[in-house]
Length: 80
Image 1 (spheres, one colour):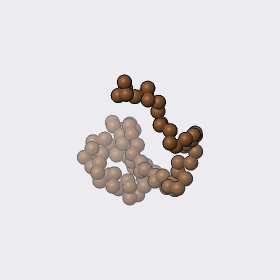
Image 2 (tube, rainbow, N blue to C red):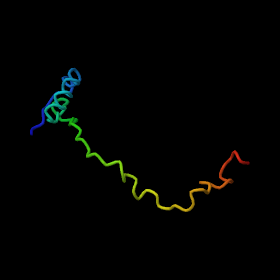
Image 3 (tube, rainbow, N blue to C red):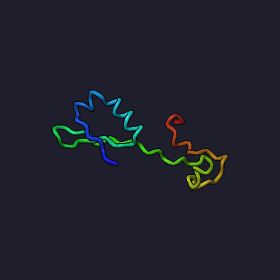
Image 4 (cartoon, rainbow, N blue to C red):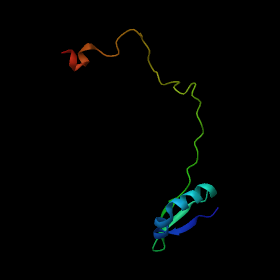
């Protein structure tokens, strides 16, 4: 798969069409200024879906008493 090469002025004038074409073909677009590459526009690869169940496993590292306050009374400025 070869990258398509487009001048910066052409990209500026046709950017939405070029982005749509890139998403359809999956072919990256190299943007040049005065013949030198300055940027590469490439499609985003979808990330694999993570299951919702178990997504927070290992996040809670300590669980003492669920009925105790989460913070001490002295930690609150409104208390004093």
